[in-house]
Length: 200
Image (cartoon, rainbow, N blue to C red):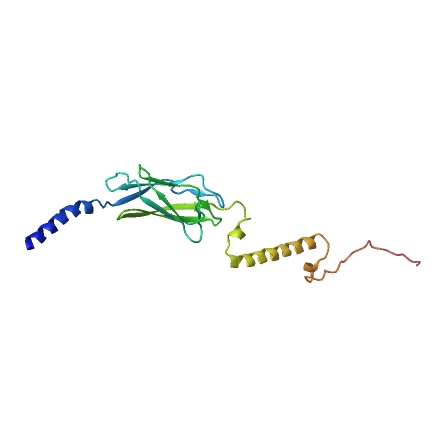
């Protein structure tokens, strides 16, 4: 009975060993779209493409590749309207993601990329950028909601002060022209000398 149990354990090990050896270490390489600069509020025309391979360099087909965008700050959404998207690698081990819609907050951000197939896992990041908006029109919309009110108030106050200065320089006294002025110095004038000669 003991020998039979040992034989069964040995047979199981010989059968399971090749299956355990098939668990490969995955590698991810970004081959397109690294360092891309996205225009604020627009969809990117360039895809982000990664290549999944084994440690020997052999492409891995059928791997689930997950792309994650940041929840705040410079970021965006994918075509599905979410910040997470899953793509399956093709026969060449490649997975491409199209149509990233960047938000309007300028700066650098990371796309976290995870690949998995059976028990094998791998991860990397791709650095992306949201470009600075042209002009200052979108600076107010990029600010957090709590600051927008104060920024709008500051802009309004600054505009009122400028309007008051312009009105004062134009000659029309306005409410902003109530600054006391210094007294003018007296004006002295010298006329032509007059000589009068009387009788002796």
